Length: 490
Image (cartoon, rainbow, N blue to C red; front, side):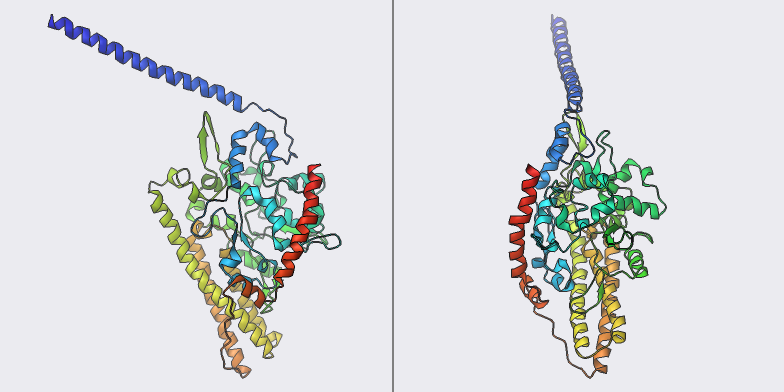
């Protein structure tokens, strides 16, 4: 009797276990079938897209997940210790920059950039492109639109890059109104990554490299390198045209690029205080990224700034391009096992130490510019000033190469500290030469450091009429820019 009871219990246990297993297998099979069906549905194109289609929302009909994540670049709520997704007035944060860029448009306005969603809005609103109205053109060329959106390759394909670059910035305002998006980086038929800006291809050609042979992993950085690089506007390629050139012929380092500019005797502008022939670094992020451990190990920009995510049966790149610090779980922690707080601390430690040296170099540079002006006032001549002004140019180029390279203090901290260290040494050398020059002119006093404790005081110090610049801009936005938008909506 007892044996029969045990057998019965065993049968029931086997039956229940089998039922559970069959139930779980059924769920798994249903999930697989469901995801396969979803996959088929997702990749079924709803509209035909031509490569010249600039409207991101049209591409989004075929690729809704990518488009929805792209639209999140409109979110400006994230702030890290130094940057983030918000529009930050960097001149207000650091008024020394106003003096360092005296005589250059950045002294008027320099903000921490927002997401790709804002690329057109932000260039409309910046004071750097002037305030075009009827009869008064912009102070900048059409070249300034080059990285602002997919209307640019569309317009270039209709004529030529040189034709696109020609003319003042306001003359193509009605034609460039779609923000950075799909057609900037993707082939419309295959969705493969593509290069749409000629300057990158031309730079590779000059280096003897065939960019068409780049691997998919390399392309996941190169599409970013179309814009997130050092560049300048050459007047020597097509007469009367500000042609975009990446100065990589000698290599990617700070010194390689400096040599390129020195060899062609290039100057971005003459400094408003010291009269030094200056270079302005743009944003050499691709260059500096390669100098750090992640770049050297083959990590791509997209690995951290657009990490893969999965929804339903789909794995795709998150097109919410942003700081990895706002998405540590999907970026850093894919490879690193440390806790979020530890990883954040690691990043901020590097940034803190580089900012410390950067601030020291900034103060030296402000002093050097002001002291150079004093030397001119004391009657110094060109021959006496030339070596001093060259030192100022070299020191500030090193500062700017670091300051303008967003993320460089994390991407390549060792290299950034080396560059800043060299910049400090060169700036000190300039001030030693100035001190000797002062003695030769009979001046033994100290040149006072200007009161540039606020952005307004710094802009007043270098002679900017900010009230007029802002008033002119407001009129331009309400008339010229409003007309561009109205025309595009027709």
